[in-house]
Length: 103
Ligand code: SF4
Image 1 (tube, rainbow, N blue to C red):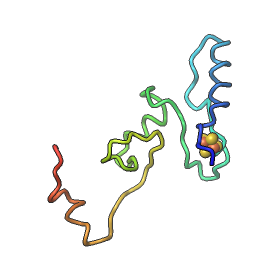
Image 2: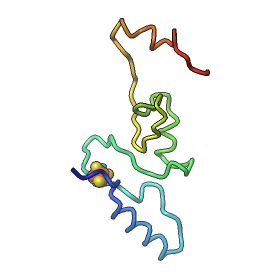
Image 3: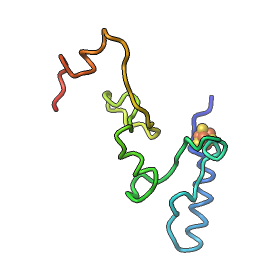
Image 4: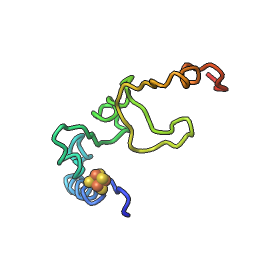
């Protein structure tokens, strides 16, 4: 199985083009292949360190979440969704009761 490279060949192509033109890579200039193929435009790729980029702004939305964030994994791919847990047995843990968090 091959792991996602975030289309490194496209990133390098844009990086070289920007270097030749003595500029930085513009927001939205790089599209991954799966982003380009997605008919619902559900995938956004960009520089999260550029606070004006679309992806950085989407990551500030309240719906933004990371998988296994509680394990401090810091995944590069994150998601937007309204999360809920319909399992009543897990409700106390989800509401923070009994948790040993520091917040
Ligand atoms: S097409 Fe998507 S899944 Fe495949 S390498 Fe590019 S970013 Fe990763």
